[in-house]
Length: 429
Image (tube, rainbow, N blue to C red; front, side, top):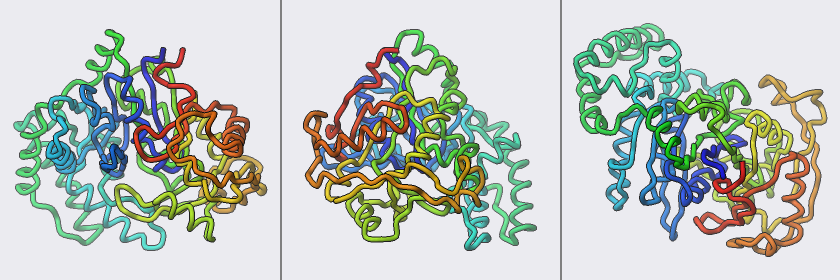
């Protein structure tokens, strides 16, 4: 039986990871976020009630499940506090179930300001970030000048550390961006208020996770964004600022690589992307409009409309390889119910290998395999035998091309609208 399962996206994010994490937590003892920040948006729909999470793991809506934010996550304290309070206002217990790694980097006001100024300065060449300070916070982490959540627990040294890093960023704001500097006293007062609220939840997460493993607890590691946004393996430079692939589940939590038993890769039955960057199978016709309309394709974090296109099996196969995916979960199958024909990208006709640069990605010309649509409803089906034959053919094509079995098929947004062929938390390892 799988004790530790990683759930991550295999496209450009927005694959429906939150729903699947929530589903699997029925068998889990703890859910751990291991990278990204509040640029993520995980949408859960339970009994027609919609909940959007940005930092708190998607297991929070299951009573008794511990939720942990790992050291690989960058945390904007004000946003986290707001999310905690919103959940508690709806009756969800949070503070007694949430642990935050003391090694997680803190997103500060200067990070947000720098992020927004940079994007504005790039004009048409903007990356398409959410402007929430994610990239600059990761930069400070790598430069070894950033504040970490553990620093909030020691106000005696917090002020001195803040003075040093604020001096650096104020110089950049003033002399590079010609913008106003931030006031030390205002920033310090705000971070101290946040520290008072969050300090009881800050802990040595790595020790806690290994203690859970030693008592045979089941762990679910939750990624944000998607594999094609990985800083190393994605469509660089149109990527996020962290490693979104499976290796980050270990480095972003403190677990060992050999502690991971199963990697579940989430993919939509088609493809979407938010923001700038290459997208070989993007559609600009009625089919693209239908995918957007039927799939309600708007970013959960920013509300931006998602670009839509056919499923790219070439990119999916690469994502499976770099993640060591054990099984796939296909989401939003029901969005394709009305299509007469469905296309799958099976090759890049003008590329000798997998694209390695933005220029190569932008030049990609996809070759398609066309399948007949089933034109009947799959919404809410829970038994694989009840799926239309042509829907099963689509599933088989994905499995055959990628060499990876499909474990779960999501047939609607609700928690119970799924076909479960193999439960990752119960799979033999």
